[in-house]
Image (cartoon, rainbow, N blue to C red):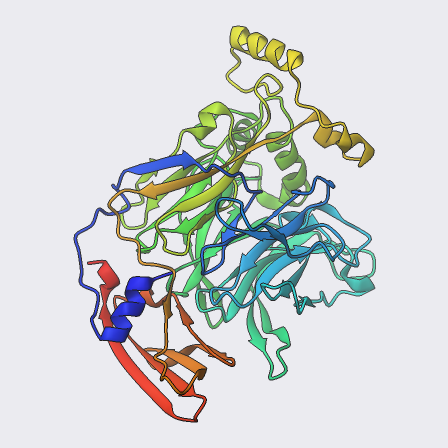
Length: 498
């Protein structure tokens, strides 16, 4: 964690500003991590990785926690019925959200990624206190509904997620999506729940997928099919009392999705298929030329996604891009898509220095990309047929499609060389006396309570996202076992970012 910040707090020395390269022009360098995690890895404040995968090869995905090199791996949800996918760590590190099909009979797609059957659960990092956060109000136990792609706000007090209501039998479902935000609370007995659940983007027939929050907590990024049929674009929702003040960030017939802010909030990094010919880009362009409206999205989103990304003929590939929010200039960051890779969810590590993601592709020779190169395709297909990637265990597990279409994965780690990256959180060590322990500690950011902890012998407390502001003050109140209270207040400017 931020050792330098803790030292500065203890000594009263504020961090000094330093020159840096803007993210919009900083060199972007990506390498392959020595250990491959599953899709959508996220981080604990202490740097451990939380991810869902099928590590034990039982063909049922569960949520795990491990070091970045894969050591000390522990399953957090193996005591629960699978699948349990797409974890999201609360910035304070005290709760882990995950998406599950537990208790549902009607399921489709993948839990947390979109489909039918997902609900929101949380647990402690030690896998205790598993709690369903949100029960859909529809009758029949919410069958036919889905809650997916949930993200914590930077202060850990709110959640945003995409919701699908397809319960047309005994509920009020119309096969439509909306976007919801709720407050996260924990009562005096330690029981978590959501309050003030509200719809901030309407069920207008468009498809939605929620993405990461802005570092200052003012709102969140999301994907919406917009304009013409299945034209997926990126937007920013600045939260208001009535819902969203919407800003459109992309305008391209490619599939634009999976977005996250740069730490300085001057740019947004996102995934797009825009530079790769394939089924989806071809369909999207034809839809624009014919003027097909979004009225068809309810019927098209699943088949178009399946054909565009989950089958080998004319499959799409994607890369990472960065849009400058001031100029709207877009630069391409990766070229992995040239080799058939598809980049899904992306995340920053706790120090905001590294961008992580796990990308997927079908083996070369099995996939038939566009534009078609007959000689190269024939050579790769022969090589694949001589050395096919087949897992017979998938047959006995009933996953025939995964046997026929095996997926290759690799975890990528990228940096913006020379860019200033304030950490996502700061950890402070309260001062301790020789004859007394610290039993309670609370942190206040610009006078607002942002973190509190209690225990027999506290050694640290974490403040999430203090560097979202250029100038701020932190007040730490520690209560010792003798009952004595000690208060420190420190002011910071820019935290190393000018």
